[in-house]
Image 1 (cartoon, rainbow, N blue to C red):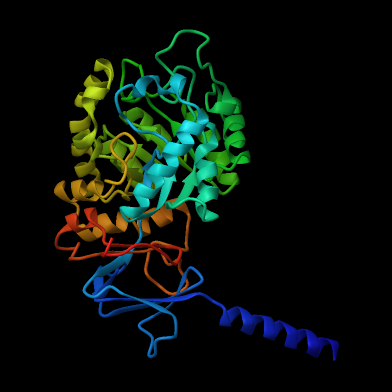
Image 2: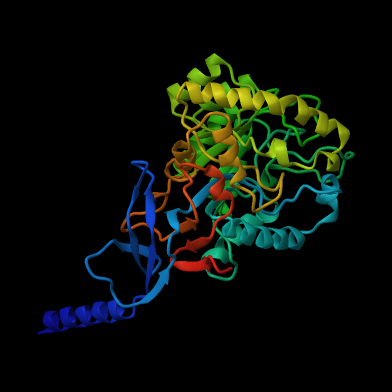
Length: 420
């Protein structure tokens, strides 16, 4: 009798839960199966409790119906390289001493909404001060802030005086240590990685080489040693956390890939040897090319602007080389270096440089899902998160359709419709 009562009670609870499940039915002309690269017609997608419950069922369950007419549906896009707390604008280079954690957090919340409404339902935030990206991720999931799912990194890690350090100031100003991402030697980098993970990082970002937006003479010189990068990769992977490496120069790119880093960010100066190493190791390339066309160069100190003008054309050629050799491609933008909410321009740039529209879309969906280690998104399929976007056109024919998204659903909640 006790067992029977328990079973009956359990069943009653299950029925009660099912009866109160939130159901939304999204109807559209078609949806893109990103795996096959083909459209499925029509698109009747049943969403329950934030997940896709069924597609084109024989009967439509009761619930709120969102009829989008001739819209084309796609899985929500993902961006592998954002800086939601950052905006490059006049005075940007002194923001570290002018702005507070509250300023950065407010900026992140505002920019998160812009990003979501642009059709990006998941982003990888690769470096933010004061763990504002961790707080933002929690706020989004709690429904306190409108934004994409955020995979936070905490502080990006780099050497003393390197790209991920605070440079351009005198001694004693904003000196940092491994708790804020600056480390020297494998042991110090392991402590730095552990500290970020302790405080909520779900990805680790390292600066393997010099960069454009830091006060160094070189753009691509290797900064972290192979041993330092391997120590970070091994430690992060023990925690089930992926690692991204900012890397412009060839030597740093090769070292990062050989050290087990999961993705190369920028990858501006690739050679045949570097490309072969990336392919051998299955390392993703996240090229961040669109920013060259959109960054406000006049807002940068002359030294930094000149470095950018030198390296950006090389990045385009490196992308084409990697594409021709079959390197695994991610889609990341470096949003924050250019205006938030224009992330889809990166897909357009990739297609302009020779990538097919479906491969560009895959880089922003199933490829990024693989890179991020998230199996619950990236496709429109039963059981996955209801992260769905819609456009009034055919993005396989015209990739620019993705720069003007008409419908956005994240986790089963509608944030944008064609009427808005």
